[in-house]
Length: 399
Image (tube, rainbow, N blue to C red):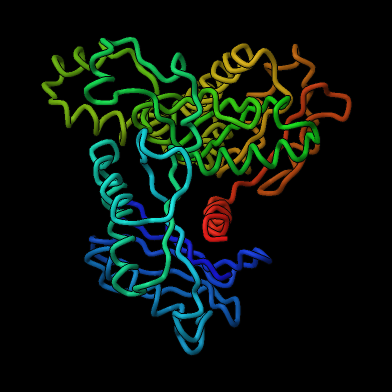
């Protein structure tokens, strides 16, 4: 079965065409700056493997999706001769609220529920819906499936997801911890449990999805029992440009001093804070590492604050699960920045986890055990693959 995986962001559309049986990737690419000047599509030729790029005016996601179809059908670079060769489409949908605890085949009722959740993810759910609509128009009759970022975390117990505000706000508005990056946390935790080789029900794994957006999840018995992102992806860890958890009273204090309204405050917390705001240098850890090497004290502060925020969460989750079998690192920073991993893991010698410094330093973007062989708790780098996870879920739904 050939499955087209679509991942729509607010101004992007990422895609892969995957064979669900062999898990071979026939095609992949990315549309960027949708609705903005100088939009383009970058893709890999399915025949030569050459990386190519085209500048295309993309005022909306429908036009972007058409650009993807044009590349897939291209007589030189394309992966298929007809859209009839594509058996299904799997969509990443950011927010499923409490409606969805697993992936689903898309129908009118599902679309209505995704729309209901749009006020919980205003930058993403509408874009996800545009991708679904564009696909429906260009590929009528092709089954489509929705794979939700929030679904994996629907197993959290009530005490983990509830906030300490009047319960009526949960009853009226469903204000609670939802968690995100669920597809990645699910994919990596399943692989971690395979590596451990123990019964799923006995497993305890902590997944550190560390990238520009970052979250940590406690997975006990194969199920998410707590996660760092909350009602929105702003909560939890210090991130690239997001503040992570802050004392809410800080917002009123800044608003009064700087004469800011709520929208300005949210822009500050989402786009001007985190590693960028602390360092004054960049939100990219490659730049932070270079800044530290150059003796930049604020780069060092940003690095240390990020790692410390992760240490506190991991330690809390170890306590919440009464132990841990593996700490797994994934996503851009988690898979590639050995210094970040080392800075975090040095705090966990007390549980019998000892870093293999040589292996850790040599590990970039590949699966590897980075703890020593005699460690009682393991540490691994496990590359995430959200597109493959979406394809697997889509194939399972249509089997």
